[in-house]
Length: 83
Image 1 (tube, helix red, strand yellow):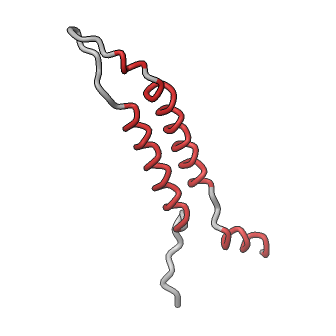
Image 2: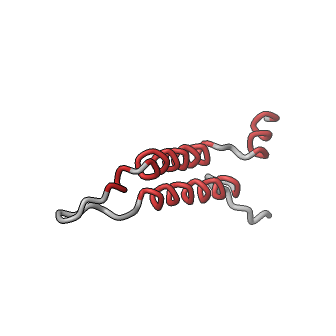
Image 3: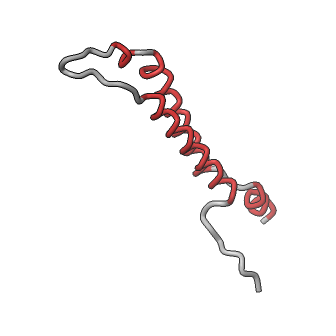
């Protein structure tokens, strides 16, 4: 009798999800910064880091999270081929 549970995701899926989430969080950190107020204009809100780099980093993080969800572990994929 085995006590192994059948989870929807394998260990590698959870690792990939965690890495993807970390990349998304990094993208949001890159987007943060000082904001303009009614009395002071902050030109940094239009910097390349905040308008180009950070959204691309977030997009890559979300894409990697989608890959982590659809990724099938190798041992499970080999079982389906042999059956």
